[in-house]
Image 1 (cartoon, rainbow, N blue to C red):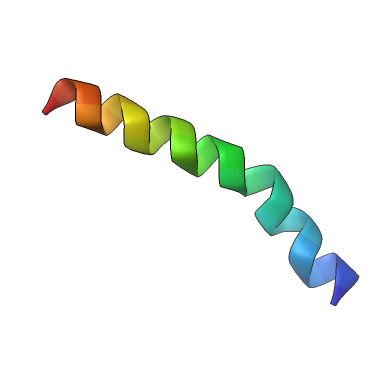
Image 2 (cartoon, rainbow, N blue to C red; image 1 turned 120 degrees about the vertical axis):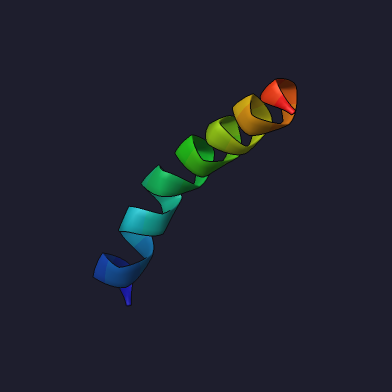
Length: 26
């Protein structure tokens, strides 16, 4: 479970940043 959760904790902020960038473009 730890190995499965670690990637999400590191990818979470990146996905949020990309979402905010897409919202700014729209």
